[in-house]
Length: 383
Ligand SMILES: *Cc1c(COP(=O)(O)O)cnc(C)c1O
Image (cartoon, rainbow, N blue to C red; front, side, top):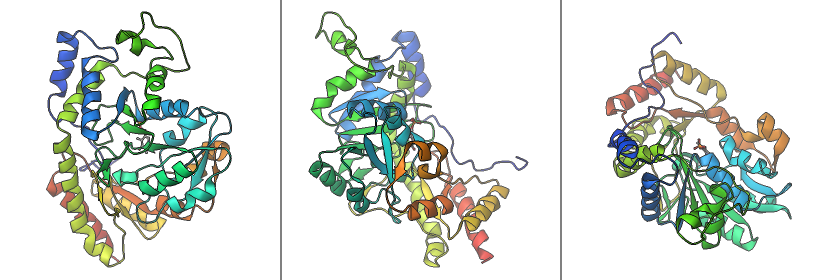
């Protein structure tokens, strides 16, 4: 790249005592394996802040989704209804168990799975519905939960974007049977790589612990509930080390500060771009009533693929990195091989062509936001 990047798309950050806690894990606790003191603190924090029955820290959101697929007992040919407009892990975690992702289209306003299309996608092989809260904007959970209950299906929330967003006063990830969170460095609360599984139904807690501990009942052993531990079920190694948890705990202590900063940047973007939206050049994010959001992604939707590509280049020449989002899974090579679609994918295809994510990170200044929106406004002056 010949031009210097002035405003990156994302920037990992230290919010408080991250490095101090890592030193403490190593030098004072003398404990850096999984399920150490910092892991326990992170889990307790999530349980109390989100109001969740049981939280298990994992190495990634992908790992949390993989555990969910085992808990849902996905067998070869079982179907999982999900949007195509999402990250690969949403589907891949289930394909690993032999599951078949059934892709449905998204709503043009929230860009989340269109709940009206779920019923038609249900077959005798359907096991679960997998809502993804895109950009931290909640899906229509009441309707999704209702359909699931009537059809005896599990609901697994991909809440990778949704940390501390809420739907009708309930935090994302705590509404379905399971929720999967991500602490990847591109997300709101970070630890480089990292994730958590939220288990919201008592009857799955014990098995979730076993799957996460390589299929052993070691968690029970550590609690003194059995006198030796042994192999009892399928599972894998899904514990992050306590150094990761130490970093993460410092982020959690600053979660309110981080989210409110992101929301501030988000509302500045809104304010500065509303005139362009009113003129019909771009579309801005849209949130359902009675929802709280977390400023995870700020995106605009242009009128065509060409316009998005031109705008991306125009901003890039000013040192501003803005990026698209997703090659829809139904049109990816593996998606075609392992999944199928139900109905048209018109909105998904359009959004994938026209969506542009603007820079948004904790250390971004109001001036940076102004620079980005000046760029966008200047681009549309030519129209
Ligand atoms: C980032 C992301 C994931 C995966 O998270 P990891 O922690 O990187 O495994 C899953 N789903 C969505 C929607 C994501 O954006």
